[in-house]
Image 1 (cartoon, rainbow, N blue to C red):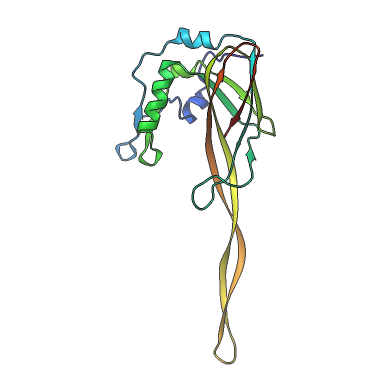
Image 2: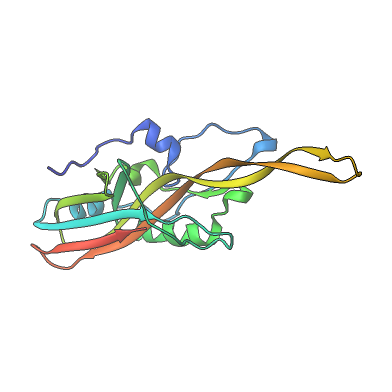
Length: 205
């Protein structure tokens, strides 16, 4: 059964890059925060999330990045992560364009939806195969987002010492050890429902 969440969860609002409730940081740790300037139309968003007869079915996954920064290799399926669905309203479009223009996490620049806009969303949880479903959808355009964490493993040779023989020669010794690096990918996709009763399939990656 589809649920419309009437209020923003404090945890979600603190962690997601789409909506924020934050404490003003010290000057040395200053963040630049941007919001859309257009007025959010809550009636439009509510109408878009009303019950319909279409279904959105998806699978969420990512791939590890190689040394060149490109995603490659086997899929890593999202296991028990939250997928958020938002109606694509004029307010949302402005947020998305502003994010492309301004967002830069290295420079601590962030673009958020207002808390009022983020209230109008649906949520689904993926299964172990990354599958999720949004039933009872109306025709319209929607935006899906999730955060998929995974660990990448590798090996390196650690120097353990040097041995010397009776002739003055030396041998360096190494031991192979494993390392791990945690990653979190933001996976997003637009999806459009064109008519009632259809099943729309989407890959969220």
